[in-house]
Structure formats: structure tokens, C-alpha cells
Image (tube, rainbow, N blue to C red; front, side, top):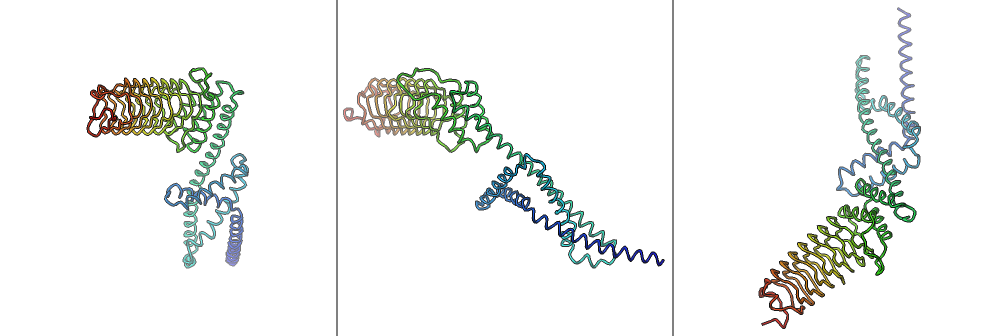
Length: 419
């Protein structure tokens, strides 16, 4: 019995000192965790990034989260953590040890408080402490799982971004060094850039500028000696890519001073594009979205059937024999040579037309509140709606032309036709 009592006393003393040694070890590990500050910064970045996504109404939080995110990505890129797995091992294992030590020691004591010391029976006290530790470890495991998932997503995002940059740079090189790349390489580069625009909205404006510069370099500037031929396949593919994605960016396209004869813009979106100085003879704009575009130059025989040209500006243009049937031309400004153009059944309310309109077809056109100036000799106004239109600047207009049109007392006629 005496030996048993001595052994029990020694066990109690050993347990007490072991507990003190464990507490010291836990606090040392916690100090190591404080030294490893990078994971803390990354965790803060994750929290702020989630806040930035879920609460977009706070611009300050969004700016802070964006800055931390950019800084974390730069740190990852500098240390090469996404390419050197041993760096992750060197960072993760000390952090894991520190977290476990904190959970089993100070965190458990803080969670239980001083109430656990009041439990007399040692078995019950140990049971309460172990339950608290198990709860903390389970919560930590769940947090670690979510954090691992977010880290994996971040690493994939960084790797994907680098891959996009590599593809973008290679395609840009093929398009800008047109003499070195083959036709096939240029065509594949255009398709590559369009694919990047589809998956990376942040790169769309830069890619659209690359494609516009490529078209300008490849097609050349308008010249009287330039043959009127259809554009090459890579040029047409670049135009199609711009037309497919220009409506999803906030940047206006610049396609000025380019030779684009016979180009195909059908059913594409080129809203607010500037075509000033470009040769667009025989181009096809049928069913295209062309609101507020700017044209200045030759558009002879260019087709605009069923296109949306509301608010567009045609300055010093030649649209000889160009069909505009069923087009939307409200508030359009058209100055130039329109001889032989076909505007039948077009909607041209509040439009401004000035120039030669000899032989122009205005059959069934809505010209209410529009202003017309110029020569309309032999123009066809059958069924045209001229109510409220200003025709005082026209010459060559006859009463026979007005008899087949729809006019009212608000229609302003030329002086020589007034009663």
C-alpha cells in the first residue's frame, strides 16, 4: 500500500510538470505562428475578397480587398509557390503545428474559462476539456477545408491568368509581324484572341485594339490604285470577332482610313464605330447594329438592308446605288451624294439629308419631321410620309412628286411650290 501511494504521488507530480512543459511548448509554438505572418495576410485577403464579392456597395472595402488580393498574387509569383511544392510544405507544417497548439492550449482554456477548475473530479474535468478540444479541432478542420478550397481556386486563377497572357502574347506577335507569320498562323491567332475575349472579359478592350491595328496593317489604307477585291480570310475573321464582342465592351472601335471594300459586316454589332476615311465600296452591312457610327468616304453600292443606323453620321459620303431598304435611320445625318440610293420603307424620322438625291427611291419612307436639302430631281416619293418635314432647301422637286406623297399643313415646302 505504501509503494502504491508513493507511485501515485510521483505520477501526480510528473503529470503536473508535464502539463507545465506542454503549456510552455504551446506558447513557443504560438510565437512561431506569429512569426509566420504570410498565412495571416492571405487569410485576411480571403475574408476581404469574399466581402468584396458579397457586399459590392462598399467601395472602400472593395479597394482594400483588391489591393490585398493583388499583393498576395505578387507574393505567390515572387516566391514561386505555385511551382515549388516544398515552399508550401515549409509554410504549412509550422502553421498547422502552431494552430493545433493554440487550440489544445490557450484556446481551450479561454473557451472553458475558470469554471473548469471548479470541477472536483479529475475524470469529469478531463472529459470536459477533451470535449472542448474536439469541438475546436472540428471547427478548425472545417475552416481548413474551406481555406484549402479557396487557395486551390486562387492558384488555378493565377495559373490560368499566366496561360492567358502567354497565349495573348503569342497571338499578338503573329498578328503584328505579318511578314513573318503564315496566313494559317494569322487566322489561328485571330481565333485564339476571340476565344480569350469569350473567357476573359478583362482582356477584351486590349484584344479589340490588337485586332483593329492588325486589320489596319494587313488591309492597308485606301488608294485609287488599290484593286477592289474581297478582304483576306484573316481580315474577315478579325472583323467578325470585333463585331461579335464590341457590344460587350465600353470602348469605341477605331476603323478609320482602312481599305475594306467588299467586307462583310452582316448581322454584326459595330455600334459607335468610327469608319471615317475608310473605303467601304460594295461592303455588306445588312442586319447590322450600326447606331451612332461615323462614316466619311466612299460607300457606293454598300448594302444596309434592315440595319439599325439610328443616330449615325454620314459626312461627305458617296452612297450611290446603295440599298437602305427597311433600315432604321431615325435621327441620322446624311451629307453627300445619294444619287440612285434605295431608301424604300426605311424609318427616317427626324433625319437630316443634304446633297444630291437625284433618282433616289423614297418609296414608303417615314420622313416625318426630317430636313431635306439638295437636288431631288427624278426622286420617287410615292407613299413617303412628309408630314412636318422641312423641304425648303430642296430644288428639282415637282408637284407631281408631292401628289403621291403624304404631306400636311406642317410640311414646309420650297418657296416656288407654295400656294
